[in-house]
Length: 587
Image (cartoon, rainbow, N blue to C red; front, top):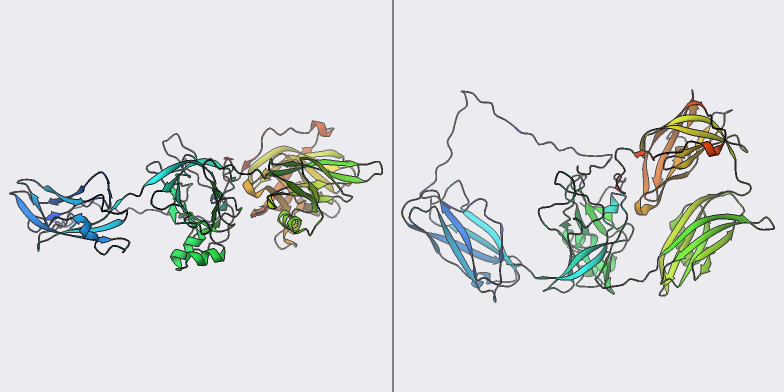
């Protein structure tokens, strides 16, 4: 089945069919009669005709509703250049002035000739009409309008490496590079098109047993990119051919949006920083300068390329490897009881150096900017390996690393973790209970074990919660106060990183949105789920105690056999549900 992902607002469009009942009272009124022999063009005639450079003419059919003797009828044919740059477009075609119907034949052929060496790669607008007063019929077209053109030549350049950053506007898909054929226009160097990048090639599309798929199987779609000006790259408005339940997804670039809607010039868009660039065989766009529309979701276009990940790498181009990764490798204490955080850094082959820093909290973006500007202390490394940082206070920290190459910052990575100074905390199992998810996950999670800290009786945790992590909170049995920790849920949401859960009181800085509490054997957690791109939702979730724990030690705690299901959707690659996105201003 098609992907109908959870959203908070959806429009259900119903098609109303009106039926008339049969009865003796129905008055029949016959249709209009044809005048004369009723000359007309078929109503299903093509609206566009492709002219071949290997042919010298094309045919148009004209019909009559009354057959009989041979008849010749005058036709009027006008030709104009669709681009208004050819004042004498009709001179390029041999245009007949009449057409003859053979005896007892209802159809005849109008043959329009052309010289393939003269006809240009333009669109020509044709208007054909049958002359003669009254010689028409209500059952066809008295006037036939169509466009004829020689298809512009495209040459395949091979397989490009494409990285999408349109779909991450609405979905948690990753920006995974994949191979797509790329073609260049033979008449306009620098005008490229990717061949159906959102068809079968797209990593997150699926075909189904009923013969349908996430993409249109009836035709080929292209993503056309105008890179004629390497410093003024833009994408025209075009359908992708992909539908995840909200209509054929449309893609555009902000530069061309303003060029079409507001009459802006390409130079103005370059000055505003809305255009992409084409350099060293790579096409990229600045962050937030692409647009996407799902026509059945909401009006208007939404900003895309929010990760700045959109990239087209031409065939044969080998990119420098400036990748970088960092992980938290634990802690250690030296002979003087000083405490240190251990970071493990992995550098790509072309990284010349990297700056590594330890910062409090989870604001990675600000830390990256501060590292690049030199506003915070960092350790510079030139090879992969461990880096240590002195750290004497417990809390939430982030390891942040920025790679450098070719004289400038390239890529960044981070790892957020909870750090505690002193001996490891020990816990005692107290109760078994049933956790009910209502926001990010859905359903019940029975048999989870609730532990109490041996050193701080107000500290509690539920093991194997969410995506197999510890769910920590404080509960003061004397005052009844409950506060959920700001903590990871164990799941990474595409390119936006780890998803977190937090108590609403902590997240909003007050009690107006609700408070967590304990009552009659049930904990009521007022929580919110969020990631770096925003929040997913907030509500109450519950943990109901079902009995005292029989667990005598932490090693015998319940082993979780599977992770909970996501609310409203089966876990499906990274396509979980639509994110909350800011209302589009691009109408």
